Length: 272
Ligand SMILES: [Zn+2]
Ligand SMILES: [Zn+2]
Ligand SMILES: [Zn+2]
Image 1 (cartoon, protein in one colour):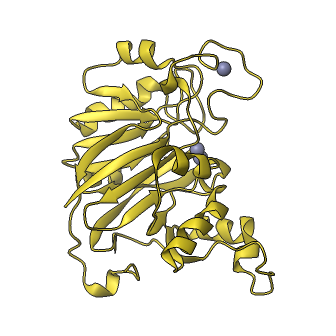
Image 2 (cartoon, protein in one colour):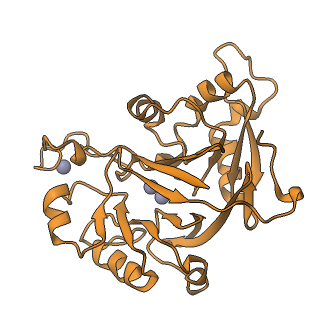
Image 3 (cartoon, helix red, strand yellow):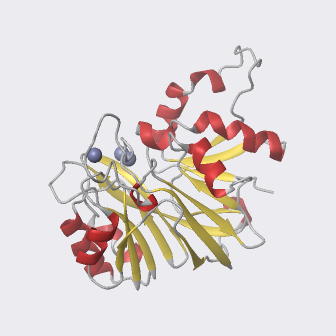
């Protein structure tokens, strides 16, 4: 099954430009140097429309990229830049006339219930509309709308988080360490989006050089670096990267091939 991936946001948690910064990248006229908070959208041909993370910028990203439907949301982890747009999922559930299944690990589910307590509290007055979401814990490979999805365990500092593999594509944001046991899960992947914050070391994100080392081992045809801060100008950085590796940018889109799920229907979710 064919699918189209769109990068909704390629920036680090501050976004680029960063508030109060006058550096060359924050003042750049190149659209590709304007980076909203990290998220991707996957539109499967005749299949589900998947959102990975609900970034702080979800509303503006949906308007900018013409995202008018979301059938399910996958969360990588619960840092603010990845979840704070969840309230804006209201429009998608209103238009779908159904709640939206959300998939996350146990720690992220607990954090979502805390951060968005009003959405889960039956006593909340419904006046302004509430996000209608059903939480599903990820404990292994799963399926949404017949599409096979493989969680890829990653380390983000001391915190275990999830990347995701969809057929020949893997989305690996917010990491500074790929555990040894996760490399086999990436065998044969054709396109990878991987975290690379900047050149200077960081305790929870890969540098460009660290990301390149991982990519060399995984060996995809094409890679894109994401979660980028204002240290990396788009054009100049791309000129310094090896063939087949580029910085992602907001609005970048490419085609992938996803797999039909081989799981029993018990593993299938409520997506309809
Ligand atoms: Zn992040
Ligand atoms: Zn700046
Ligand atoms: Zn994070």
